[in-house]
Image (cartoon, rainbow, N blue to C red):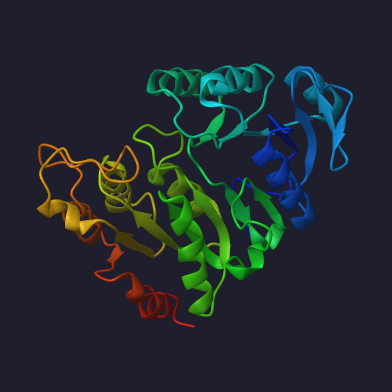
Length: 299
């Protein structure tokens, strides 16, 4: 009933003593997430919420067999934190940090690809698998059950806030989620919708996926191509926000830095058309999600 955030995770929080990271760690532990260690240079030997703190990722990995890291460090240090995690064999890297320099992201993703490390983010709000009682990051806050309950629907969202909203709509329709993934709203990110769809395809417990898209990038078009090629065979329900942007001057940026329509690229209408032609169930209004979800699942 889960991808990415699974019972196999052995989790480290890099930057654990920061204000937000400390709060998120508390919420994740209360939910049942297996956070085994934290790293905060100069604070090794201390503990936070019962989680031991180390000066280096290497020490944490040697002590706890870490395979997953949640990165909560300032933008200028995100690259170094990610590279340290990858160098110590961590295979899932969730980068929560916003405003990471683009060149740093490119370098991090190059190294991650070479070393077989899956990166989600940057600028992600997290990943949650309610059936496994595991959440990584701020997703769901201190009461995840308000929006996230176990079920057969996967959720992929470019918007952090809408990850919760979509999952709540799934709950309203009478279902729950297998895993909800906030992939991040930046122009360059680690795991794209296409790559997350491939993981949901391989999960026998996920029966359908809801995709929340946004203007800018070619992420939704790549997902449509994957769908058309038969890479994803389950029902895909998609909504792309921001149609009003098509009436604005080209080059206007809204919200995330990736929300850019330029030279005819990134238009929500084009994204929806590509997904529709590929066999996806596209929504003109977000509220249409409830009846469409009930129709495709047939329960």
